[in-house]
Image (cartoon, rainbow, N blue to C red; front, side, top):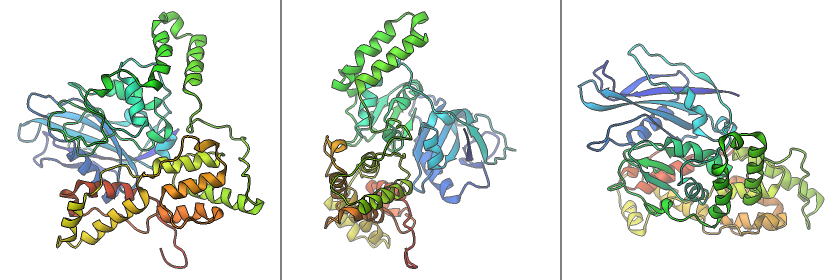
Length: 439
């Protein structure tokens, strides 16, 4: 498929005397995208002493909505002859297009450029991408990294070179809901962007909060789920090359993996699958609920499904907040701060903790429950109180989880990192449609 991309180039180059600056950008690259991409590039940090930069890639979702996939390329020396200069080629991808590409940043790697001149100009470009299927892993850390990311944990790996091979193997094997939210950097020198998967030349001195696995944990024994897949992967690796890549062998391994892993909420579904019958609901209520759930899925850019329970599970997975939280001391300091943005910052905190905290997880048998029970549990997980009537829950969720206007960064975020995460999370929420002349 062909996907239209906006692009920009930022860096320090030996052919000018401007330090780090934007070299070129396509005309459709909005100012807020540029500002957010530049902040993400600067957050990548500087190479520690003794470390030589190498080609790398990172991808994350911008606060303003789109995804950016950025190629990082060493330039040798900067305009003053200092080593370690970098150039960043950023592609800006619409969220729906990113999902069409399998939510895999490596599908866009072929559109990244490495060489630049003072005469460089950029326009929007079409990139031909194809979803990347899973392949047999070669890195022994693969299974534990996949499982950690699927459980909403983050992984930082100490590596003397970029972890691109591992990241490329991991990404197609992640659940779709994880790919649609997770960020990655094959190599970085700092972690201010809080990537979900990141390679770092040194972990010492890098701040890793409680959402990250303990350093070295991915080298431990696989968990129960990983052990289920282990014999199949081990069997694959023992096959001779002439057999391993034959179609029957591939089919056998894929069938075994599917059997061991069991059905997943993110598995593709036949388009002719019948709509689930909702016991205990009137026909007119059932029709209204299903129509509103379709509206909800469209508004929140959820992968489509004919099963309303899957739509609700995806909403819960993608729109609960699991990042940093301001502690009581920080809240008191902000409340006493003369900065005019303090009220906005406190309002963000109130909304995050009042609506989005993941403190009422869905039960393990959620998929087997009747729809009225599923709706009630999801409403409870987003703290809708009092609980609406069953037929009203989809519309109430749309209103409760949307935003009425833009989310603009506040200077207070420089002192309170949780505020940056609040802004990034709230900025991903869909805008509410105007009702009766208001927001």
